[in-house]
Length: 241
Image (cartoon, rainbow, N blue to C red):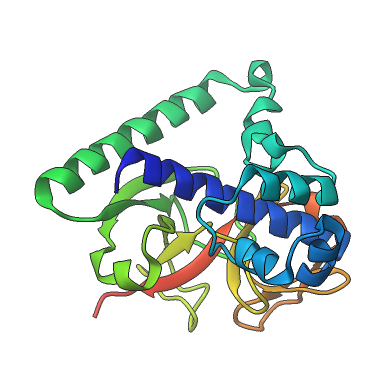
């Protein structure tokens, strides 16, 4: 895939995620967005589903008008622009530099070995629902066997350490995470609330419900979606035979 295609995929995935986020906040259906934007329902359905790789500026502008947001917001640019860099400690920039360096090495490795590896984040400590994800190590996993199913939507992997999430996920399982869109009902996502990370099933409704994957804890109900940072959805599990 060339750089232009990669850039288009990144912008499309970001836009789809932000549209779904705003639809949830407004409690709108795809039909309501279609009516408010004055665009055909099937076109909006394909756009929200990530089926349109390169929508026209007219379509994007009409969607932004309907959702009362800027194009920059829809494309994810305002997220970076609103970060107060002066408030971030030096370790944050060191971490970003290390991740960028690690990703560049993975890209070099993939090219030279004809593989398709992505980075895997491994927390230091036992993984549990509602853990503080404050320290990680990195590794790689080859996702070539999953290209047919998921193409280029895999963001990274997250490694499960310990047995706190069994029998759904086991020790050393690697969750492949995608951020192509917001989860659909009952899909499992990774959510950050405050300083804690939750691996939960997404249940849409008047209040956002995050249900435990094993049914051994109470659901979390969220009144304001802005209190939740959505990291990505679980696409599949890489498990040792």
